[in-house]
Length: 344
Image 1: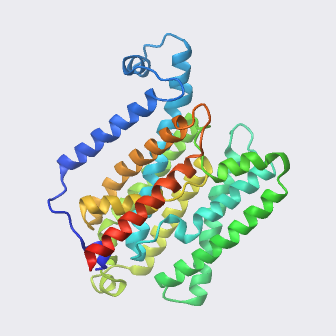
Image 2: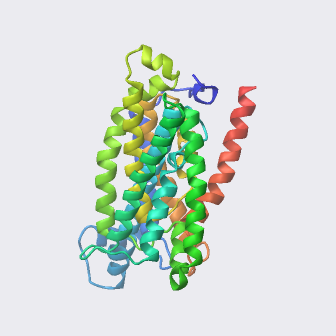
Image 3: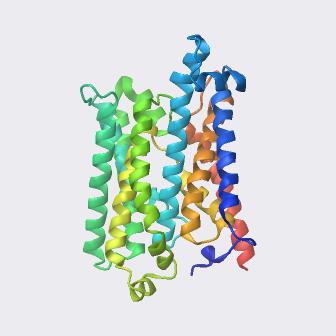
């Protein structure tokens, strides 16, 4: 087992710890609903959420602005964190997350194309962006896997990561080229590429919920296989794991989930990279415990990041991707330094 995966917590992680995580996420949820450019008391917020609406401005703020945004933020955070934890286990690489595949970059390229050319689906607001993001995430996965297979018939982890990084650079150059000719849409594209959930709707929340339920359920069901991958693909193959099938299945499911998240929230960095490391310090490397806990921590982290983006420079709003990049980069350097220091 890799050294970065081998450290176990001093005590077992059980139901009580999951309940504590759930309680913490619930507190963060209500904090994010109440706080903002216009702060509302918890009592009034609960009144509105329980259906006792008075039809005033506070109702509109809570029900039509903050509630869908906070729900979408929690679901995106949980999804990206889960994808990161799965990719780190599958590829046995502490620097891996969903973006390592290049799928995030591909989805971003598709969304930027839709924004630039004004692609729309009648009767479905934002449907063009979502369709292009998901479609390009699939196409990116097919291209990356095809190139990896041509270079290495065994689908080596290093080959997939290398091809994914190169593809991400290529997509970034195309996005910059599109931004050069975007004209009046440049500001919208720029803000979107830095990550934003300000325009979240209940339709987007429903889409994220369905995607996380289906894709997340599949990934959670592969926890045993991911534990086998942690000790090496050869060992996993010897204990009966169909390495090639499992790897392809996980890569496809991750690409779908990331494509949906990117289409709704834009490019949000470091969530899938940092949160699994923090969770692993609490639960240990067992994916049966790690993956569910990652959902809670990812949701809580991104809700707090979104709250900071809304209130730090109020009434101005920072892109959430800026906040996650600043906080995540510092946290990752600290985590990486601490793990190296302990491993000596």
